[in-house]
Length: 253
Image (tube, rainbow, N blue to C red):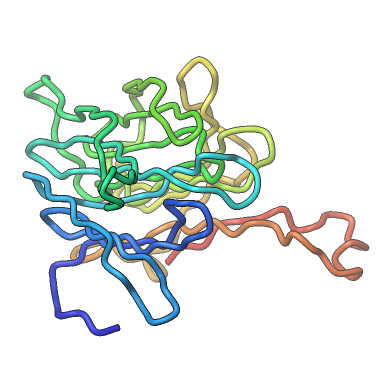
């Protein structure tokens, strides 16, 4: 399917209705939703917004198995905001994106400076929490249930110059990898566990690592990203014989 060049900032594939896959394309001023049909992409709806869209993510309605998703959009400064959207069908059989919740990210503290590198949003694979970063030394943690907003909390963090944050494979805790620049301008990779007391505690699941500047130079133009590597769902017999089977990891790109 041919599309004219445009200011696409983010995109994702998910199912917004049962049994149908959708392509969600985020542009600076809104979203376009397409359904995947045998003949190609079919435009379903357009959602416009005043503000600069940074990214769009899917919020799974169910934690297990294939399911439908809702959407969450993050807007950029100066009016940083999270917008929760639901894909609904009207009486005339047309689809539209409907706002279900808005969460301001703007800090009233005049001394709070915007994040230098990592202005982004990540969602837990099971859709339990989402984390938004747009200010130095502070992140927004949003608790979710069934693809819907429950509550949010501002949490202070020690790492002020974040390059990337990612959820890491972990069966029973919210484990995150933090890549950041420390006071000596060295790039470091640490793990933190998000606790029930709304705090990030150091974790031994990932050894604290200083990444050589030859591998990851100081980010003058672009910055590196973390990508979680899940454990294989069906390990072969050779892997099963290992005393320490592969439980997952993280890539630096």
